[in-house]
Length: 482
Ligand code: NAP
Ligand code: MG
Image 1: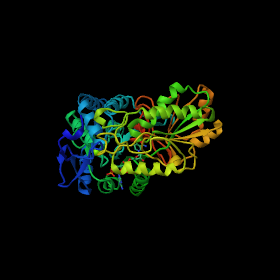
Image 2 (image 1 turned 120 degrees about the vertical axis):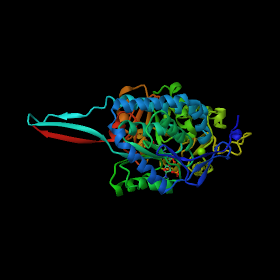
Image 3 (image 1 turned 180 degrees about the horizontal axis):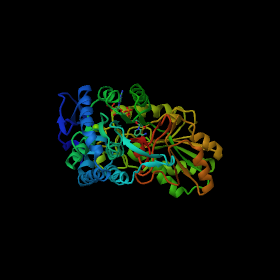
Image 4 (image 1 turned 60 degrees about the vertical axis):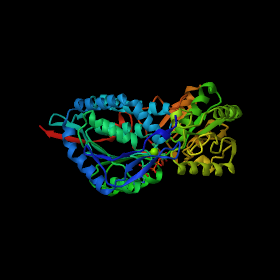
């Protein structure tokens, strides 16, 4: 089935539990066909202001409820997401182009975030401090208040779970600005949460453009904490806005993460995972395994095996559930194509390098899985985040060189290490500056439980895992003189 049978829909923003239509809309495009599938509310400063006020109004009562009570609501949201899983997955695929199997997995992960924070919040205790017999000291963890969330288009459903669930669990109320290319699942989850019993105003979804709605949210004086996921460039603007209002900020930015394959690696295990780590979501994943660093003795074998896998991958509309769907937009496809053209003069193109010309693919924003070999570390394609299905391969001669190469970009998000030598793996893991390091794997089943975030231009602050409960709270030390 292709997406042409889908009727155009019109979507208002969700503010204070109500549908709010500012009167202006923008088009949401199906990346598989280039056709407009929905018109979405184009909100600006007035709607952001209304959402912040709605969140402020809801927040004290929400925070006063017991952790178990808030957790109960979060569990019902998880159940509601699961009950609507197929609808949400199809919506996510339509909106972002990703293969249906990926969208189904993403929706399941979104639900798991609500479950995870429903559970952890009940065991999120404060501390006491032993100042001696003259004092009784407790350290409480309090919510910031109203939290602002700006997310990208690559994993909208997962991002709602990742950023909204811990914020709500800890007693904050939220205003979310989804990316202009992908708002349908965040909106739908917003309505599902309301139906599941979340108070009106606790979670507001305000759609619009980054420079309008996004900028209004990040600079709003009523925001007490900002969480941003997106590009380094916009992350800098968000950081400045946070500095202006003196509010804490978590910025999850781009990456150029490397899989490092040492000579003793189990290649039968490594090659399929390395391939998937760049192909997933057509390479539009901040933590994608975008570089492949291989010890000389394995160089040709890995190159040939990865190239063969790339050539066997299917590309098509997400609803047909291929290995790769389209990229999110014509702009993104053109950006990837331009970087690939730069790469042709910097390294050896092994396979791919163009938009596929198969039947039914001409209207969409598709790009072939692409492998470059002998990529010098100073090449543009070795340093810049491409955010497409493009893998750049660089051989190395020893572990020191591997560590230097791995750490040799401005980014530091994730790394993968492949070896049978446990000591070598540990040593190398410690040398790479990245928020997550995987050994003989890449990812850990959704990664909900693992703190996630960057070094260098990949950002700072942590989301996911238990650590997000710290990010969404601040301490208050209460000292009572006895
Ligand atoms: P982006 O352009 O930075 O946009 C991210 C979000 O910021 C969108 O909602 C965008 O709205 C909004 N925005 C844009 N300009 C803004 C402004 N002046 N003020 C406030 N908000 C603004 O990034 P993207 O193109 O959507 O996503 C791709 C990038 O995100 C890649 O670099 C990728 O690595 C990174 N990413 C990082 C992670 C992570 O966890 N580290 C996860 C996913 C993606 P509009 O859509 O309306 O422009
Ligand atoms: Mg879209």
